[in-house]
Image (tube, rainbow, N blue to C red):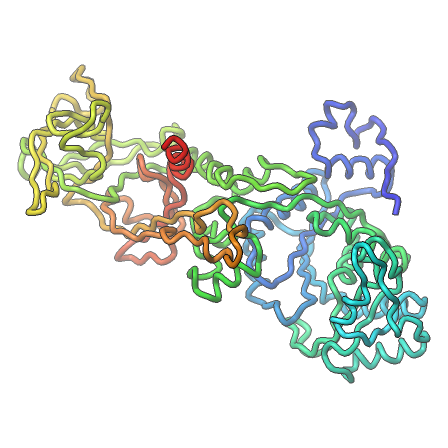
Length: 575
C-alpha cells in the first residue's frame, strides 16, 4: 500500500529548515511529518515484549526509543505484554520485565496485556468471518507451508478457502469451545495467495492450543497469532506510532490490512534496526539454552547481555541510556562493537564512582625503617572527577601489600613502578625505595624490603623529590579479605553465531570468562553495601554483588580501566 506522506510545512511541529531536520533521526522525522500533516494529534507509543524470557540489551534500545519519543513529544508510552503463547510465557518473566523497565528509569502510562483483549479479538475475528475475509482451515502446519508457495512461485488456495460464512462461524465457535485437537484447525485471513509478500498469503489468525495461560487460566484454548493481536491491541490503546524492528517491515501491510478491514484506528508502523553486539548472542532461545544447560548461573549471570545480568554486573541505567543514545536509530542492520557499551559505563563511573584501593595479586612489602607499631592515617581523594566527593582516611603501617605485577627485581629501563634499587610513590602516602627481597625455596619473591622517605608524605610539601611512578597499596594489618569475581566476555569471538560447519555458538564460549580470587582491600571496602560501585584504583570498576555476606564482601568486575581485548588484538596484529 502507498505509505507516502506529504511534505511537512515549516511550523512549530516540524523542522523549520534542513539543518533542524538533520538533527532528527528518521523515526522522529516521520513522526513530525505525520503531526504536521494532521494524521495524528499526538504521540502515543508502547513497548510490547513477549514474557517468554528476560529482556536483554537489545530490548533496552527499544525501551529507550519508545519511552524517549513519548517524553520528547509530551505523549504517553504503555507497557504491554504480548502474552499470546501460553506454552512459553511465565509470570516470572512479567515481573522481571517490569523491574527492568523501572530500573532503566522509565514509567509506563498504562500496564496492559494482549490477553486483556482476547474477547474483543475473538469478536473482531467473527466480524471478519461474516465479512467473508476469514475462514477456518483444516490444513496441517506442514500442509499450510506447502500451500503457501515460495518467493518465486505463488501459493495455492486452501481446499477450505470457499467455505460458507455459516460453516466458518460454526467451526470457529467449536474451536473456541474446545472440540478440536491442537493443530487440527486454524482461522486464516482471506487475502491473496499470489501476493509477492508471503506474509499476505492468507496468514493464520488463530491456532488451537489447549494450554494453561498465566493470566486467563483455562478459559481459552484458541490463541491469537502475533500479527492478529498486535495491531488491534495498538488500535484499542490509541497508539499512534508502532515502533518495531526491521524484521516486521514485511508485516506492515498486514498490520494495516487488519485495521482497515475492521475499520478501526490505524496506527503508523515504523521499523528500525535491532541492536547486534560483537562477542554477544541476542537470541532469547540461545540465552535460554545457556541458562537451562547451566553454562551460566542464571538469567542474571553478570556475563549475560540481559538487563538483569548487566545490572548485577554493575552497569548503571545512565550508562545504558547513554549507550543507546550514542548508537542512535538506524534503518539498516549492523553490528555495534561491544567496546562502545563498555566505554559508556567507564565514562559514567569515572564521574560518579568513589576510588578505593584493593590489591588483587598481593605480595608483602615491609618498610624496614618504619617505627614498630606505628599506624598513620593518610588522606585519599574519593573521586578526583568530583570536587564535592571529599576525602577519606586510610590506615598506613609498616607492613603493606602491593600488586605483584607492580614489582620487578630486574626491570627494563622504562619500568616506572617499583624495582630493586629504585623508588616509587605509594598513593596518598610516601616515596619508598627497594633494597632487597625475600624468596621462597622455589625462588619466588614472597617479601619486598623497602625504606620509606619520611620527608615525602603526600601533601606535606616538605620535599622536592620526584619519582616517575605511583602505585596503590593496602596496609597489611588493616586489610580486608574480599572475594573478587573477574568477569570477562562470555564469548571469545566477535560473532559467536558464525563458525565452521558443525559448530554452534556454544563452541565459542570463553573458558576464561570468570576467575574468582581473594583480594586484599582497604577497610572501607569491607563496609560497602550491595550495589555499591567503586573504582579499584589502577585496576577497574567493581560492584558489590548480592552474594555478599556481613562476613565477606563479593565484588564483580564491571569493566577494566581500558579495553584490554583491543590491546590484545593490536598486539596480535603487531606480532
